[in-house]
Amino acid sequence: MAKKQKNKEEKKSFDFIIFTTLLILLSLGITMVLSASSPSSLAITGSSYTYVTKQFISAIIGIVLMLILSNIDYKKYQKFYKIIYIISFLAL
Image (cartoon, rainbow, N blue to C red; front, side):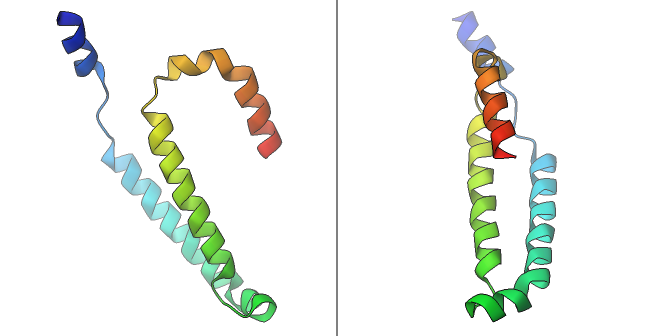
């Protein structure tokens, strides 16, 4: 019984300051993409929001993946570090 209580106590709380900072920087970045790409997007695709929509969808996917992966103990990633490294390198 003591082990179950210890595991629940060790679980880290959600860091709202970092998450708020992330959202502020993300919103500034998406605003910059909109202001920089709006004229060219309108000329090429007929919509000012083409590039911003892609950026916003990617941001949402990234936030969801971040929240999922942050709840997994990082020691479990140790088995797969080579594969993760290769995938990260190829993604760049």
